[in-house]
Image 1 (tube, rainbow, N blue to C red):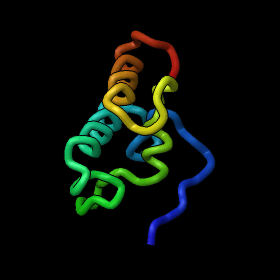
Image 2: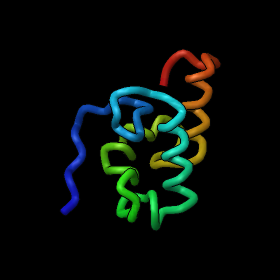
Image 3: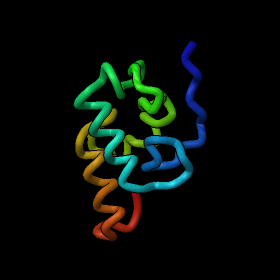
Length: 84
């Protein structure tokens, strides 16, 4: 069964570990590049979850996960932008 996502979104926390770091950007890219392993129904135990998809969708110009979400998280981590 698939666990329903929470309504409490933590923008940028794609891996749902409580912090925003490079691992979140990496997980987004992995889920896009290798969905069989890291996508929503991926075979890897660390695959992205429904909540992770909601959290990781930080690019407000496009709905859903894209590489721009990972890029925006990286810019945030480098202090190039102030908020997600």
